[in-house]
Image 1 (cartoon, each protein chain N blue to C red):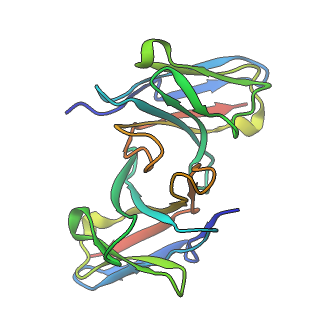
Image 2 (cartoon, rainbow over the protein chains, first blue to last red):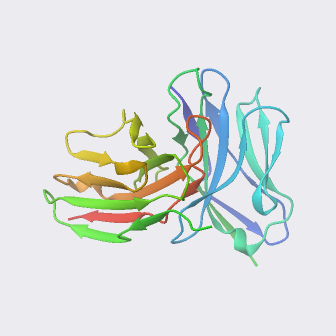
Image 3 (cartoon, rainbow over the protein chains, first blue to last red):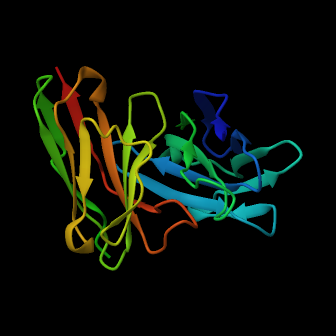
Length: 116
Length: 115
């Protein structure tokens, strides 16, 4: 069975400071990993994904995430936070085609609050 | 580019009543997904369509939930009869390809409250 853990319900950071939103996963096989953002009263928006290749993945709005296989982590990062980054962030995992059911599993979400 | 459209935005019904949600995916997207997001949890995939065929509905409570995608475009998700625990946001998503990544484009969702 696959699972995703987002250990922090909420992350607080001051504007201009670097931010990290943590995600760890458990899956048998090679993971496909994703980050989505959900702004208030908006649908989920895709930020970035890791499928294969470079462990550092760059995505939308200046976000990036680093795949660490030994630590089974895929933490979301941004060098300088903006107040407008305040939202709910979801990490998700699934296995590649041919390695089993590809129903994705989402984490519970982490609320990011960026203070002015 | 127009996004994924869903209606209604909000719905309040009594338990044991029926309800239907509608989704219009992004034009040209062959894959359509319905997710259920209960408050405080991440979205859970209910059903995935490829064109008008069902790819996976293993997490759909088929005794009360049904979904269809006629002509491979719009889709409806129905609950009959509704239970209190069905209160959630129902998200529709679409993507160009199936099986390789999550639906990258989500609608705003329909917030269902069952009382």
